[in-house]
Length: 426
Image 1 (spheres, rainbow, N blue to C red):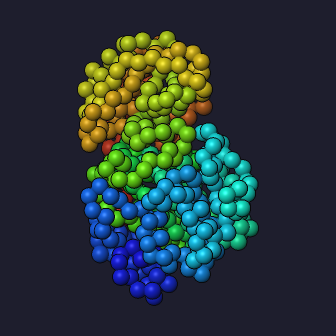
Image 2: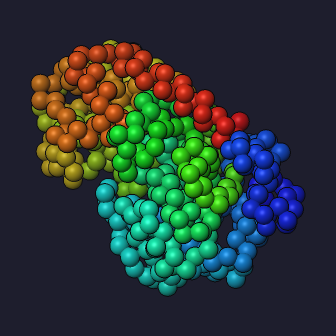
Image 3: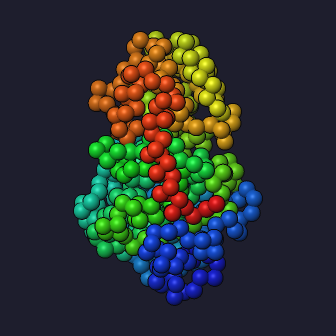
């Protein structure tokens, strides 16, 4: 699709999506005229990449056999699923669906998928791509008979949320298979003013972080796709086209977009969950519950035997934008299932000032100081989540929040400078 109004058919056929060949080759972000950034939608109304694709009559997909990577968040302006919309439109040759973690219809819990099946609504084959990458995934694309892989999934802005690495794996596999990739953009629900937290070190790469980006990356999926192609896949870049949004600005939170929220995974029920997730998901690397199995996952953390001293110590840190309140809960599943837990509830009172990663570090530091039962997971999963062993070692050494944040500051500054080349919005 032409990302800027008035892009010629010739430009579309060349795969430019309104971006100059020189800008693409250099990996630079196109200017506002090329991207349509900040135009057309008006206050409080964001138009997603899918809406813009549809408005252009699916010209970006013309003459191609399409396979779509999506989940329940891939919806139209009137909340219909894009697979149903595309399948019903004779202008699109949709031949396959690819399901990520949690599955195409979103029924699986963390670390699971729905398997390969046939979609009962459209009779399309649905391929399970979770934990599949490289040549294996390239072979799936070849077997599915697609020319172009279309990606449309709502992200939440944290490095360890796996959908962005599904995108990365699809881009690498598509390049191996000789396929093109089209990424339809959606908002980063926690805004994109800045990145935050430690940058991954390569020895700690996994499916919760393939490449060196910040823990809270502050980018949209289309911007990440551009960064991946320009920085990390430059040995074999994919034929990439992105369809930008209109009306989204970097300071916008999800509630300001005018879009409906569809939970992108079973434990991401609201935009408020996404707001704290980059910090409290770090508790997956400990023996404390991160709130899975409650109605407010990631907004509460705790364990059996924790008392009010933890909330008091965390609140005494005076971290901007958030209060820490003593709370009690009983998870229905996951860690400490069926057992009453004491812990902390995060109450974000100033979203613009709040830094979820610092909040998460503050909670780790004070949990270790106030609860004698605190322990890391034996497999040191925390190192995968933070991107190195440095946070764990600093917490164990008794370091405070500012010392730990200071340790990652230089790497974060380098990432901020690098990501600037690939941003699409002001």
